[in-house]
Image (cartoon, rainbow over all chains, first blue to last red; front, side, top):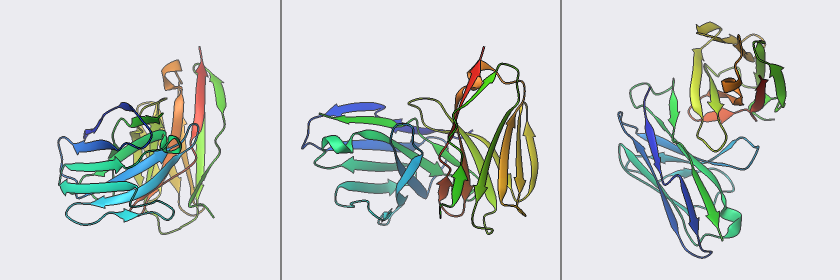
Length: 117
Length: 108
């Protein structure tokens, strides 16, 4: 199956600093990528939809100035958590949809565990 | 109303048993249905996807979709301890909508 690589897999940062998470589709092109947040023992919560070459679409309640998303190429999207605070500590997961098989499959990265201290 | 409803369990079965997982969804327009498996601290892994109604089988896994009742199921035959994970159903319109996930433990 298609591979989505997410980096880093875990990160610890100080409160007030910014953290960038990368999501790459390794063997396919993805015009659309999705960013999720997952709290312990809960399902995935969609944060935003990232479209190559245009602005991301954020879900209701997600602060776009805090969670900056850039999708500069067909294989790379980044999520930057700005001025991170302890309540931003969570598991962040990206997924990418193969541009050629739009509706059928979305592949996930391995996730990034962010801890803000 | 949530788009996808899934009983979070947990579900515990002995090795070799059949695991039965179910979800219901609200929008009859959905056409694509997925099951994902997620191990602790990992991203979800696509197990099965089905288009429209019907059954799909892959090894020990069978996915069923009944669009008339808006009901989707996943069956795992001859369950193994390595099948212990959280299973998430999802429906695909443009973006994925996930169920809550059911945590399954297969006891050796």
